Length: 147
Image: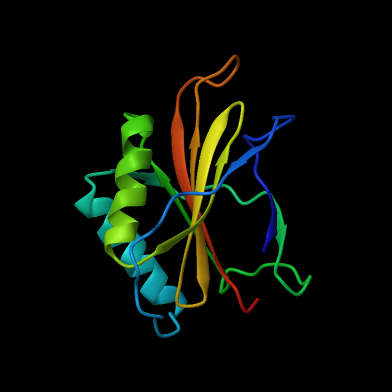
């Protein structure tokens, strides 16, 4: 699993919740970075989630301890409106494309789901409006598991 520092997660109490039975999908062929970008864009368009820009990658290393490069990472951030519903819609849209749930984390200020497919892991992150944060946000962070 990648070690990634996310800007919006700080001093939160972690609760790990393993999702229930997921639909069975056949093992998918390895995906390229461009495949992952296309699948994220398609899923978000299908879920009617507007793009607000790229998510911020603060720091990260890959599975093998090397720094993540742009070839190993895809970031995507939604527009601010409706992040709570967009989170559920984004996860559902990616699952319909064959992305399998791996983990679900419920934090004090965010909810995060990881999905896996074709040698990639996508984290779908919903950060709640709390204290100094001005609005809910939704971002996706995908990493190539071979990096």
